[in-house]
Amino acid sequence: MAQQVQGVIARAKGEPVRIETITVPDPGPGEAVVKIQACGVCHTDLHYREGGINDEFPFLLGHEAAGVVESVGEGVTEVAPGDYVILNWRAVCGQCRACLRGRPQYCFDTHNAKQKMTLADGTELSPALGIGAFAEKTLVAAGQCTKVDPAASPAAAGLLGCGVMAGIGAAINTGNVGRGDSVAVIGCGGVGNAAVVGARLAGAAKIIAVDIDDKKLRTAKELGATHTVNSRSADPVEAIRELTGGNGADVVIEAVGRPETYEQAFYARDLAGTVVLVGVPTPEMKIELPLLDVFGRGGALKSSWYGDCLPSRDFPMLIDLYQQGRLDLDAFVTETIALEDVEKAFERMHHGDVLRSVVIF
Ligand code: APR
Ligand code: ZN
Ligand code: ZN
Image 1: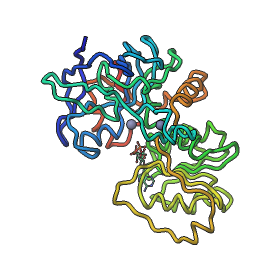
Image 2: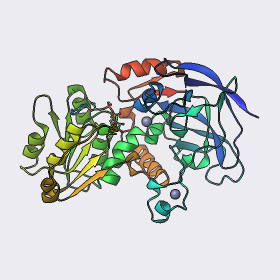
Image 3: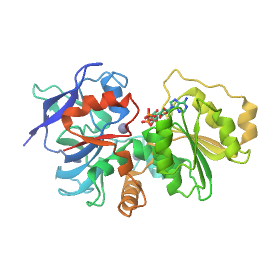
Image 4: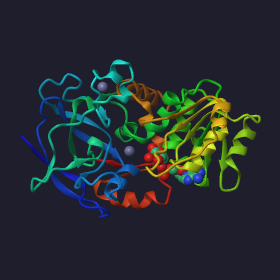
């Protein structure tokens, strides 16, 4: 039986979100209905409601979520009712060229639920990032659910579904940070600060946090940065070089998504160092680099898509570290809020004093 629940809907470009009754169908083949316990508020949700992603209004927002599988459709083997899971953007196919070459994070044929959730009048909803978890229940592809330790707090666990995973993964997966490395992180919002945490987890000896906001730098320090640089008052490239014996960092992670910060990252890396772009640029953005500098400095310029994560590998591992007290995910939960307060959380984002507001059900 299809169910009616409350969800946070963005009806039209720029309009404040509101709570509406939605219909969640029974799971079809390969699908699961998940009872959401917590869902973080991410910039991407705001971006959807501002019309910046695509024009498929109305959206059911929310995508950084943990919950319990309520029911599964035909043929589902990944999860069973009662499993505690973290949701991810897409289920990988396991059969395409990328999957077969051992790079499922670049799967060409990822999928979400086939059926649509709807408004009361039958209008089909577009779930944010194929999830739509600002709702008491949501419909996803079963492969989007990853089972983790049920003792882990949902508010913290859900954050691994997006921004925090993007940052940690940029350090441990894409940047391949190793023991004793020097790492610089440019831009210390939720994503950059998660990269600081990832670098620490990987055993980096020096972690240099760069931002234009002292508040963000204070948080970075609490999370494990060994040095901080405010790039409004100092040239970040020079500062990073100075802090690394004149060399530059082994790994520089750019978590802003702007040409000038990417260029800083490029020049702040050591010879043969790695630059990781995790900040998402807009289509118009360009940079110009002297080819001789690209050639002469060696190393690697990489981008990190969703932290190059493989949910089935990374979510349970990071939750175990969290449960052991070795990964402080709670530090990213600035406040817990009710479903009605998502619009207020969007407003607070602009002030820059929140890493994550998390809706608790
Ligand atoms: N130099 C250094 N830091 C900067 C600069 C700059 N020129 N401009 C902005 N920042 C800082 C901001 O002060 C803020 O702390 O970058 C940080 C950006 O953080 P958020 O806005 O909180 O964004 P976040 O959620 O962390 O995402 C960062 O990663 O995944 C992508 O789409 C995401 O492009 C976005 C980026
Ligand atoms: Zn695939
Ligand atoms: Zn997100």
